[in-house]
Length: 120
Image (cartoon, rainbow, N blue to C red; front, side):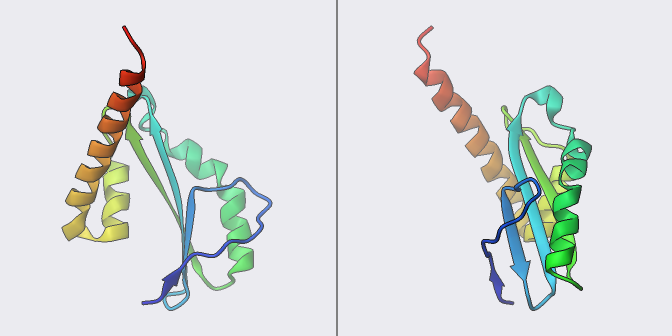
């Protein structure tokens, strides 16, 4: 499988990452963010926000399957079932638990680094 990322001008909102797989004729859009615990379940907001971008990608890559994955990890490393399913689709079931654990570790250590900059 040959996978590459390319840079192009799009008029719609910009997404965090885009992967184009020409062999499988598939474009994958990734929205990655860290949020407060209460906002973790807001996948629908991001999905509708990037609808114009998905349409523009379908025009740029006719015949390709366009998919969007919202990877949302809260500040304490928690994630929703939708995020876990997206990670499983992206990396496979065998690697998903390891990737999710690394994402949790990154979120928590990042939070700790921010907390250390403040002197209480």
